[in-house]
Length: 227
Image (cartoon, rainbow, N blue to C red; front, top):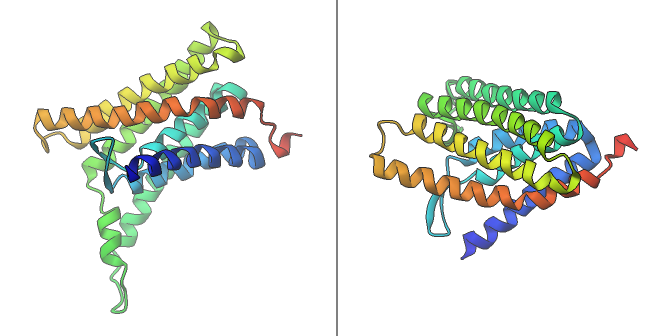
């Protein structure tokens, strides 16, 4: 049960750190969080863990937090800023991939001890890298559009949970479908692919539901630079 309890603590810590970034740096803090968590989630995804009886990749909670960040931006500043954050996350990921591909091709010194590990972590198969970027860009833009549409139908503060969960759960479903389809096409049988798809979405579903209270906290926070 260690991974389950530790994982819950990690999820809550991610959302708490997001709120701290927002409190002290306002809108800029949310932009920075999207960039940071997008990069870190794509590094953590190289590690697999066993949790709630499922084999899953690490990074789901960090990745899910980017959806909360864009929802907060959409809620408090509007769709344009939320879409700007999506593009910022995308280009942060793209820059990380390009920069590390260059870095791995330098000839290491005899005293080097990190080159092999860097290749293990950042030696992204093009299929995986493409899957990640296509899924991110598509799902995040869908999240922003659905959130904005739901805000017109459910506009009150008390209905934030509908906007937050409705947009995130639908967009996360598309994200999971796109990523697993592109990344694992021709790699696994359909049965194995189905297991990976379902286990990944179940974890994202749980994390997305857990972020709702933190969304409400963000609504009442006044950033330091806006006082």
